[in-house]
Length: 75
Image (spheres, one colour):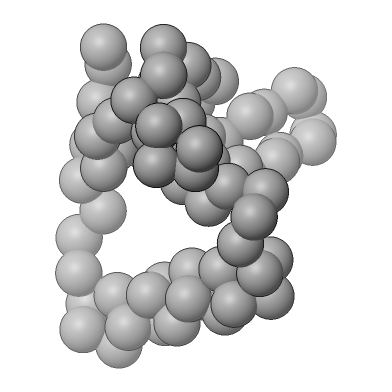
């Protein structure tokens, strides 16, 4: 069921990010002073601690390698 969810209408299908876009894998919601970052790839069956650790490790790796952030994708 988890794999089938990835091909649903509102599930992320591409490795992109955007503001307030339900189709992006990494969604950044901002309302005034509040900013909420939502990682939409993992399902409810995964271990949330391992998922968060992988996301933080990938971010630290990108900082250490001084990678440029790609522009947000619009669908």
